[in-house]
Length: 405
Image (cartoon, rainbow, N blue to C red; front, top):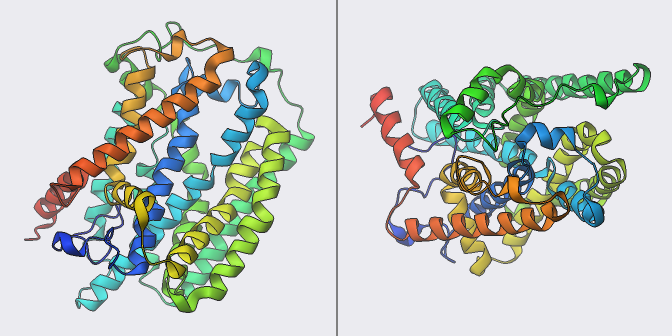
């Protein structure tokens, strides 16, 4: 098996170009998977772009979360809330689906599972480590590597055991959110004026590329805290993704599943998430990002799956999303790198020169520009190559360390 856990390759990848999933003759299920990966990648950029365009990076973003941006305050809140947590949840679910695809491929080929998957997880962890140090402190690949390794062994157990793991992990996550809610309700909050200011000089605006990398390493514990916190949620969503895939959520006979998920995710969770996030500002981010957002992600997944069940042709937008989805790992790293070049001091340093009142339109402009760059890059690359550049490097490295031909 040659597919990476990071790019969730379907069974057709690696075959001649005529079988590529963006063609209208490709299986509907595979088209939906590729499009969903593309949506998840652009959606995570929609969350991270607000961090990248802040002159003080992630620390400044968290410091001012939900704060005023002059006349753009409500626009900023709505735009941030539309992306906040939904596409992180969708990407997490898609990784679980990718594991289910790989397990199915191994079973059909008569190979033991998880077999050599730990090598895959190790390489993904290394990719994430390099991305964390050199590109973005909010990297998710390291956490996905650890979660994927755990879930790979869980998937080797029976259905009942997997269900218990899913319920158990989800329960731990809910208990943690509940404990935080109680602490916020009954424990006096510290005055925000007492916060420690960012180190001087500002590493995002004033430091070199290597100085910023060292800053990430020196504060790795703080920057990696989210990955530890969301581990139970990630395990649950990985297992849920695998379970939904096996249950046929992408097949025509999965209409009932899709309908229920759309009702819960888009009909119930989405309005609650939007209202709570916009009205509550940054105060409720923990409960929308890690509470309601995963349900919205399930609604998005089901809506896209339903669309491609009813409409086999991919279309122009679907082909562009498919190309991003096929090069998901490359695009994930590239989008953060391009935005960093534009915004951070070691690059063009644009973020530090934008007034607070203009930050919202500036951020929207940077998002559109970076999205165009990665979409065009994926399109041009796939005209000549079957894999994205990082996917190709991952593939070659895996064959070398695992001893596969």
